[in-house]
Image (cartoon, rainbow, N blue to C red; front, side, top):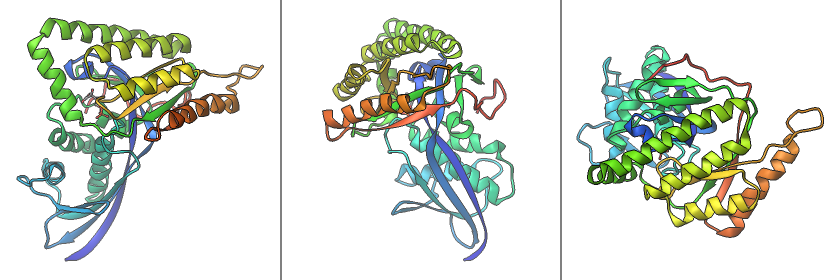
Length: 333
Ligand code: PMV
């Protein structure tokens, strides 16, 4: 095996602020890339099959491999134009099954490193990562891969693709981890099975979520954070009705609200994974963000989560008003 080149790729994790599950059925959703994400480095070599190493797992790209990872890696490399044999090392700073888009971030980071290795530009990375994502869950809406590739805060639908939102103020969220990983595939299949049995009932929930998303986009761009928090609570109620919440997710939301959050909901597929809580903004007398008081507001929530249950944990994410997403309007994977 002759090592001839090396290239790197990075991608963001994401939080879905509004609209998970409904987005699978063409409804809009709002998501934002977060700083935590995934990294990959690719090394080309001659004379061997492509190998992926993540942590202490090492797999060969194989279309009929038993492991999802080995089929996903094959799908990513095999998409036309097929990429040459390579060895890829990847790592994610996001909990697997945490509802924070870990698998899409890995897919985009690996696709970026692989594309860079052959000197191709970034534009196929999103499509390659979509091929990767389809192995893990049969019917991804594409919102995770879009956030992983683009960052920023955006509105997304399968029909219209992504368009950036322009928050009037920074949005500070606490991300709470239940300690229970969940399978997005199972949760999406569960909602699909309920929709097959009770199409009108589930469609009403999807329509309610679409209304919440449309109002949330307005609240974000108007800087109406009290309204935004209420809309998060409403979205959580509808998700609970879809039976994708758990007692731990409900507990994280309740604890956050008791400790000053303006609203809280699960994020991602549910059934475990993570929640988000909207931190009350604080301002100095001259109208600037009082980042110190905001940090205190956020800490109060994360500390309360850790006290409520030793399995819970949390971290803080800031979505900046003045950092636009890096993509053009309407672009879809
Ligand atoms: O669990 P996550 O982080 O992969 O988020 C899934 C979001 C869903 O709307 C439930 C599925 C999808 O493909 O959009």
